[in-house]
Image (cartoon, rainbow, N blue to C red; front, side):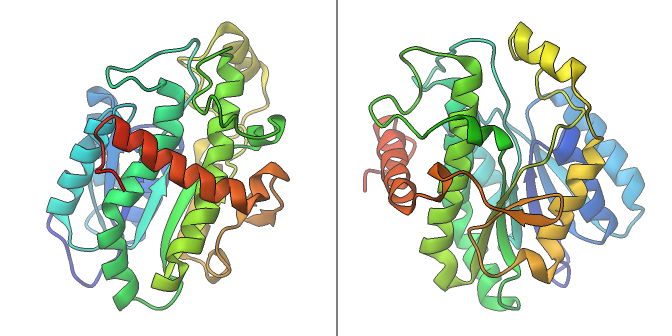
Length: 295
């Protein structure tokens, strides 16, 4: 992708299907230069072809392939992205999902926690220099990091600091909801740490969307999604587009949205001490597996 210095640049994870694909297409149609991240080669190729056809020269779209459950892959994806652009105006951390059982990755992390929390944490950390370049040159509040969380965060009382990855008594839905709580806490701490640099961090609940979200979930999760009254991915993409481009999606940072409206997340999600502690624990975990240098 050949970048135009006069057009904004966005990165969207999980862009090969569902919400991410719809969001990437809408941004590209509006003239944005979009770098998508997708795991499945066939879906990624299909998304690239579809969006390129829809854009018709207005914007641009390219895909980077990577399995974000592995931190080595996250680091590689970040390096590839840095090779494509020297700035990043918006990062949408959308990729995630639920599993049907406890899966330990080759790096020793639990896959649900890794894909839903550690990956966006590490990717944002790796891309922070590009975000800072954007923030230094764009209007205040227009450089943004947006996390796709879930209302499921309300079903858990908090994070278990003695078992952050839910490795003990593993329950797929609980592990997922804890990871979605982690998304909101990470966003609050990101806003606190990098707000002075001009970077706005927000999070959102997409709603119950018709997608392949539960494809790897257990029977109960698949049955729940099959029976649910779902909305099309474009509905969630509309809110993400609004958060990306509207003045209302800017300051103040660290907020939680659904359907283009701010909502109060759970009490546990508003715990700033927990947000700071999660940041420290996440860095320690990543350092232990060699994904980052110890701090």
